[in-house]
Amino acid sequence: MSSLLFTSIVFLCLGLPIASLVILLLLGFFEREFDYLQLENKQIRMEKELQSMEYLQLSQQIQPHFLFNSLNAMLSLGRLGRTKDIVEAMEQFSQFLRYKYIEKDALVSFEKELEYTNHYLSVQKIRFGEKLSVEFDLDDRALPTYLPPYMLQTFVENAFKHGLEKKAGEKTLLIRLKREGSWVVLTVIDNGPETMVKTHEQKGIGLDNIRKRLRLLFDLHTDVNIRRYQDRTVVTAQWPYTPGGRV
Image 1 (cartoon, rainbow, N blue to C red):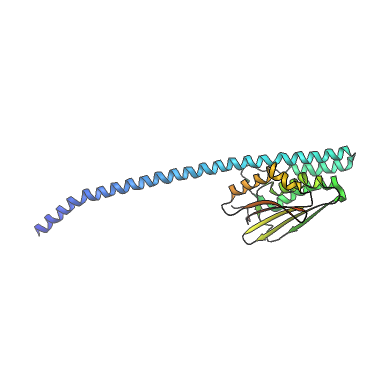
Image 2: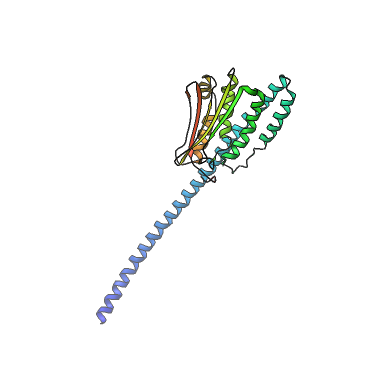
């Protein structure tokens, strides 16, 4: 009995230092892991802050273009002496100016974006009259989606700035929104001249701006492209279907 007790005491004396060493090693390991996780979380927060700053900068780059083009449209009406049309255009323009976002609004509903894009279109309809035809092809399954603010307006504005304003005679614009599985596809088609595609590629920052904004917002596949098809300029954007504005 005494030998068993002595053996137990010896094992206990030998085991305590080993157990303490193991515990110390484990504590060191977990401390390093905790420090690593803290550093990783800090890096993630910094990346998100940088993305937020970059996204805000990209959003701010777009807005002045629309303001300039709307004012330019009203100046054109003034040169033609169309006073009544100027008043109506200014009313639409004032509604357009209400389209403001606070910084955290990275996404807005498509219906809201469309509502305020229509104010811009109203100014152009006053300007061009019966020469301008605007059509909509909107999939009800896609309508609840959210998108970056000014995206649709950028497409529409570019269609006028680089295409329709240079087109003599009838001017047509088609806005199409479709749901394709878990993705949404927005397409804007106009019958402006072919030079629009080259202008976009060489000078325009609008499409590249939107590409960057979509990449910052979504981890899944996104795409923005422009092409020429059957004497039409076709601009397309694809991004994940996002009802409720949750990325």
